[in-house]
Length: 354
Ligand SMILES: N[C@@H](CCC(=O)N[C@@H](CS)C(=O)NCC(=O)O)C(=O)O
Image (cartoon, rainbow, N blue to C red):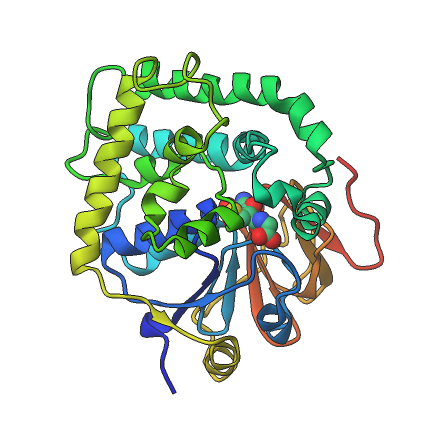
């Protein structure tokens, strides 16, 4: 049976912009890993077999430890492979990375970008997809609702382009932290959006090679998607530096692909078998009992995201609690999540409603 290089299995689908943050990172770093491709809508039996309820993509396992959310995934990869890491060592650089991360991941950028999908695209007519995303986001995904929200979403997304154009990239630098190569800040700084499944299928049918980098890169994706962005608002003329930054990033990714190890693709049951037969990747977890929530080691808790996919809660016994991370021992695996953007609730006690 195939193995998971470095013990890493990434569960994702290639057109997920969040998953791209991790696959770009792994590719730029040349870190070998295995991937297990997931369906774009529920159910996802491979994750159920690992006793993981979390529904968002991507997830990464290292051994029997499961990491949720790209913020934590990138942090763990930086810590585990420190030689040649992409993160800055300077306090200024770290501050920029963190602020960009909060803006892009904890803010509404993804939701706003997704709200720009033209309603005449096949995905929007796919009832199953719309219903799935309605449950995921807790917001209406009808054609009418998307049309109604378009002007506001456009305003928000143009504001994102403006910030990049007029602040981070204003002095003509190649990369956000003036590095020689793209760094973590450039990966953080990529506003998100998602490609439509049927669009991908259509391209495949026509026999065209799908350029995933082009497809997922949000600016590029939005620009190439007919009807997503009016040229008078966002174009190479209005935001030349952002467009040039995107082009540079794509070129860099393309050249890193020639040297990076190709991911090993595992079928679901094989991935599950490998993971369940592995050891834990992390030792020495501890629970900070002076934490604001005053949770005790071994308490039965539920952890879940509070911005999307919130009805999928993972239950387990608390084995790790720190400022930045909570870890629960689930039925089959150990699940790690960030503290911000997630809620930890003791079973039997009511959680915060904030
Ligand atoms: N904050 C999360 C967000 C992940 C997220 O929203 N991913 C999207 C895919 S791009 C998703 O899960 N969509 C619903 C689904 O695929 O079930 C992260 O950084 O990993």
